[in-house]
Image (cartoon, rainbow, N blue to C red; front, side, top):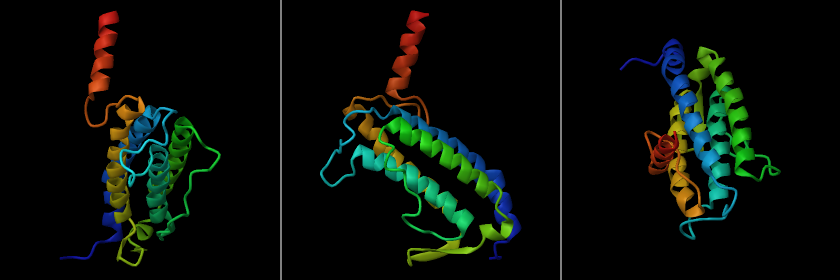
Length: 178
């Protein structure tokens, strides 16, 4: 097996990852926007994170994984949602701005930065660009959890990877009025 080159990593990031990440961040923002500003302490089980904890964790971690690529180091706790942001829409707005800034920084990264070896909590070491995929999988996992909280909280599930019951019902209602 041949060694991964910086040029290949650069092509992979620019021709595959950046577009996927941009699309997925829109989906994440739509789920954030669907979180009602009530029942934020909702959790389906005493051992689960609350909706607010999950919302803030996703927003911070998604940006942390991008910063890992740019900074060449995985530094837990280095990205935090400001404490004064309390409403889901405030967190969503912060997330969108931070994510755009960090995604632009990834796009501007030099090819050599993308293959720098990064340590993940002493568990493994991988080239920096692979943290884009780790971050994506992490976000999709937690975003799925948060989306299952929406109805019990009194919210509606938006389109994620296809119509949801709620988005189909809204479309049907809109057509009935027209």
